[in-house]
Amino acid sequence: MKILVIHGPNLDLLGEREVSIYGKLTLDQINVEINNLAKELNVETEIVQLSGEGEIVKKIGSSKKEGFSAIVINPAGYTHYSVAIRDAVAAVSIPTVEVHLSNIYAREEFRHTSVIAGAATGQVSGFGLNSYLLGLKAAVELTK
Ligand code: DQA
Image 1 (tube, rainbow, N blue to C red):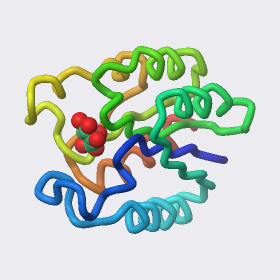
Image 2 (cartoon, rainbow, N blue to C red; image 1 turned 180 degrees about the vertical axis):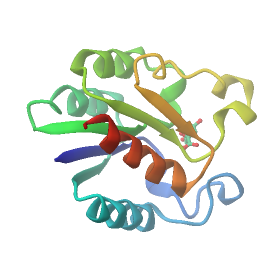
Image 3 (tube, helix red, strand yellow; image 1 turned 90 degrees about the vertical axis):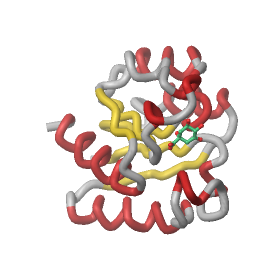
């Protein structure tokens, strides 16, 4: 079983970006932990970091054809306004878990709305690295 993990824009800067909010782990370190858990759960992953909205839309759109059973996505800044990414999630109809390192509901008001959440199967927000790990576990469960 293959799970697609998508990191959105600016997540490539983790480790140096607003450390008090996002922590010190780099994206590479997060990816190692995701892959360690994936091994334990006996699933394959493809992990991509995509900065462009169109690139994310395209990757989600081809995910079913590419044989993915579920998606874990941190849409980053697009969370709060990308109707195109929401529509892509709704269009592919495979289980999708939205994740956020920070608790978006405890931050600035413009972050309190996720336009993706209504199309996703569920959301994990506020647990740092564990948001991804819980998201991956949920995604695997959803495929059973
Ligand atoms: C984020 C939260 C978003 O509001 C922000 O734009 C990000 C990261 C998170 O993981 O906490 O880039 O998705």
